[in-house]
Image (cartoon, rainbow, N blue to C red; front, side, top):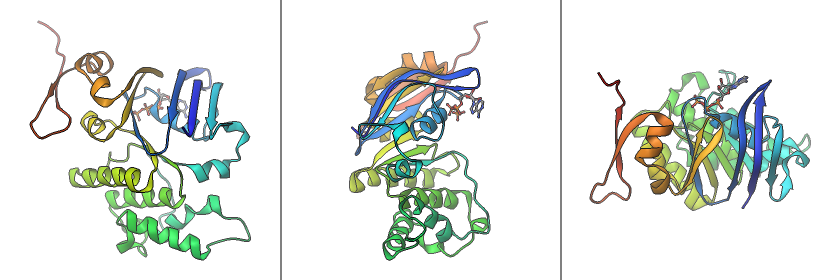
Length: 262
Ligand SMILES: Nc1ncnc2c1ncn2[C@@H]1O[C@H](COP(=O)(O)OP(=O)(O)OP(=O)(O)O)[C@@H](O)[C@H]1O
């Protein structure tokens, strides 16, 4: 286990968003966070990645309290791909991805041969090498999403936090992203914590699922155990049927929104 979270509490001002949250995160597994809008998923990722302060509880990275790590050291182990990204549009793709190497560099060691090799590897891994010399403003939303993933990979982290990485992608590129995430887990041994709104995708991709509701852990476990009609009714207020399909490892989900009885 690489990350251990104990009784975490995170607040914005006087409003507590995460209350008493505990979990463990290991390399080589895909852990998916699901939960309604505003349930605290992004807040949780930011706090565990050391970007947002937390008010109570403990986070241990490699057995050491997160507060005792320098930000740069955390960034060599955890890369967070947020929902919203900002970068000057006059950056080229390669320039942006090269920024992923910063946690491994200092003033005397900038842009080494190894850095360039890792940037090339990240571009290749995310199928973005073909437009490495283009400016960011020349990319589609889906291409840009993959470039940001390349930037996170260039950090060479052991754990990747991905906040809704499929949201702006068409169905083909969503599937491509999901396949890439599975490859990164299997071939690179990365631990991946991913926030998803698509429950079927969560069912398909995850080794483990945590359901967050109102800043608390509602349920955690294998996707086929955690994702069930009772959870979907209570947490998401939808009626759902899980449909078993021959040849598919996990069921499909058919939803209906509850309607007021006349
Ligand atoms: N910087 C901030 N200051 C104050 N409140 C915030 C801030 N960021 C988020 N919040 C609030 O914290 C709550 C949880 O937000 P968060 O973004 O973590 O939820 P989420 O589960 O990721 O939501 P979504 O699925 O909509 O992305 C929301 O009510 C949000 O309005």
